[in-house]
Length: 497
Image (cartoon, rainbow, N blue to C red; front, side, top):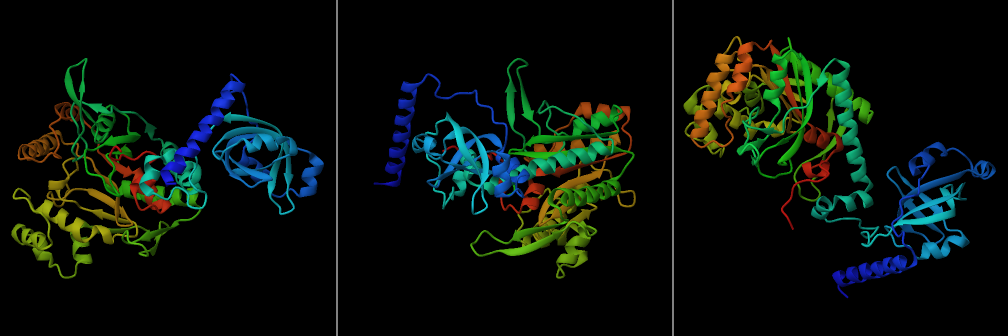
């Protein structure tokens, strides 16, 4: 019998059991059982209570959950918090024999401890709440197919405790970030996901159509321009934990739909934002993980390629300008070849970079940086002073207008955050938008549109400010030692089956 035939046989048997249940009762999927306890709470609260003490207390508890193992005299029930054993009493044997792994039951009974020291509930009352029609994966192998884990996350969460831990930790990380900003007087806001003009990032948008208005609209690539409108309006500290949509390729670091934290602070600059970010991440790791040191597995995807990297958020974050980082990590590159257009173009070509004729020196430097430096930034590192050519929303540097007061934070060889002193000069911003439009006209689908209303907002006056975006998904990847962004997204995008 093939594996598929065996699977079909098991499903047929379960459907037959459900049919028999329907004939016996009109309530085959009841919704009137209310558990008063959770497995995790019981395991925690009574971890130090002895067998004799439990017998003397005669505690009656009620739990509900999924049957994940059958050990004969004991079955294992799993709820959202943990798992706990159920002792199958003589009266409960026929009921338990009718169960399949995956069935959801409710039970009431006395809390006991076995001679081996394991906590269990002696089944006194029981009820089938949900009949599972599909068998769970083999307990020894789990859901081993990685693609199947992503497609059927509901099964992954049932059989892989590590998956549940990852997403609980993700929730704790987001909760901490929200609490940190709230505590320093930031206001959480919501901005449109559907936009007439996509802006705030150099990215290709998704296009949709609004029937009532009869116009094309875009899923937002970033909330930035709306958040800065709020700064103009007088909200001096705002943030949004937002979903963004970018019509890009799929990879271990990219998903078309992703989560970011963006915040804006008036009367502050990029130095202030770096200081805030370093403090926030140091406190985050210490609070959520219990340590400022995070272990990551580095290297390729090949089996056996496992290099342990200890990322230390407790130490001061390193800082380099983009120019200096290229020279620092590439001793063979002469600074003079980076500072002039033609030598920089030749250098980029020699590195196998697909150079476009329209690229200026700034774009060439960024491409060389991404090719030769980014993957080497393992410890938390701020890269600063990005060229104005690749920073259309950033404030120019007072000493060198070809550069901007901008930084990106890299951890584990991945870009985690992007921030800069905001450009609040409406005429300068208008000129940069025009330059982006010209690049769109030359075929750059990721270049920005001209947003006249945003220019109008700046003309009313925006106070000097700083803004930053932090990639939540990539941050969670670092803190959970996950090698793919799909491991930290509950439902990652994939090709339809």
